[in-house]
Image 1 (cartoon, rainbow, N blue to C red):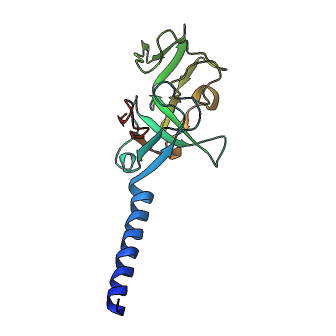
Image 2: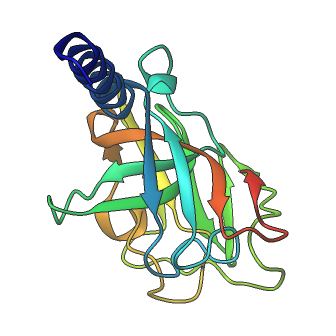
Image 3: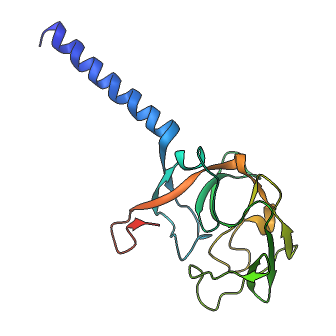
Amino acid sequence: MNISEAWEWIKSILLAVILALIIKTFLFSSTYVMGYSMYPTLHEKDRLFTSKIEYYIGEPKRGDIIVLKAPDEPDKDYIKRVIGVSNDIVELKDGKVWVNGVVLDEEYVREGFYTYPYHKTKWKVPKDHIFVLGDNRVKDASKDSRYLGCVHLSAVKGKAFFRYYPFNDRFGSL
């Protein structure tokens, strides 16, 4: 191998590394699920792709599964479902979630599960905030807005959109 061939290899490798860093920093990332707060939708050890670009151009919508910087543990991320957006009124009563006076149809929550309030039962979501819950509604199974309060949009890191592992019937879009 001569010097010009070696230089071409070095340039190609550097370009690949730079592109990978740009993609990881600005467009997509991989998320590893730890814990059971999103069960049955997500299981421990699931691996997901997260879109970072999604919220550069828009805001989270009700039903989105998001990755957010943990407000109570800065070195951790949480994965939760958006239940309420700015100006929504979220209420927990009779084991159900109500948004703006209408019971939320939550097909992602196991049938018969009761959504427990932790300290409060009603929240008005402030501007530039969201209300998030884990899909696992077993008492104390999820550290979410019932515990943390409404989350500022600046804590949102991206939208989980695809489970790439495990390779079974749960593989695919979220």
